[in-house]
Image (cartoon, rainbow, N blue to C red; front, side, top):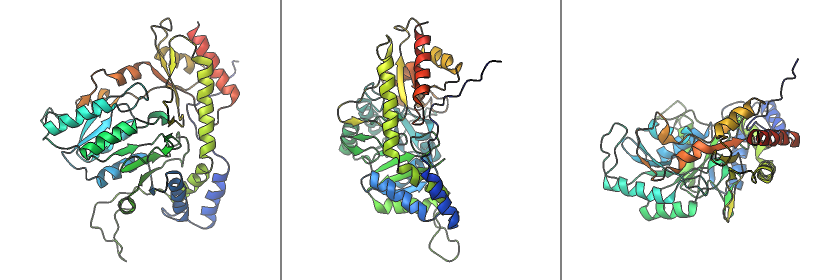
Length: 392
């Protein structure tokens, strides 16, 4: 009987052991309620990393984006500019609010929002040449928000993006869901915009099982986010509500997990970066295989290691051939995000990308197993199978 192969996951949770102690503490003190002291401690740890920004710990990164858009004043008919090459959670909250998503292509240096195409989108919005998903003309307006994304932990070109946003007076909601631990010129990702968003989903570099955070240098806005995230309950002995609220606050038990995870963030970043270094050392000399390098001043947490697979130079082996080949050996890999402008739900939304760079990235990009808990044996097994598939 053939031995069952061990599953090698793309990015599985990695506990340090201390998480259980903090969860046990929450149980022993009976803080199993939706709020409690562990949330405060978790927020403090995030704030310490994010250069003392104010923090609201929430149920998900999606909830953080939603509240960030609300606090930026986004409403029906408004224009929000969003990076196209991302997970749908970056864009879905735009639709929650009845606003118009306008998608911007990527550039190849970082795979993130192209500053040139960003400015084209802003000018089109101001000139009133955009049409919504129903083909109706969108009134001329200044976009309410810009959502760049730090894809797979690689910082976006925030210097150029921030300069353009400031020139037009547009706030930035920075999607750093995949980028806690990443920096640009030693400034943490998530701290460049009016708002920053982190995710602590189960597959992220650190996790609270499910969870996220909204950060900002504006403490009053974060206090408002906390208020909205707890059903917008007014300070009264009875239940009083003057605004629409949401059930978005992180639970105290989940926050307890997060405290332990934040304590090993630097270790997890180092382990993920070591994975990238090994993959690059072993695979970069293979014709048709390329990696996204860090530009000067960029520091990526390397949440996921990604490679580009050019079938013209790999004797016809495509990204999908490689993915399916690895799957046969119980190795999980995944195509790079399918751009939002190619998604059925958003395909009629405006898109700015003359060269359609993100289309090409999706076509040839593959995410490799990158968990910080992968053993040397696991990594060497993945590398061996990739080489076998490319040299068959």
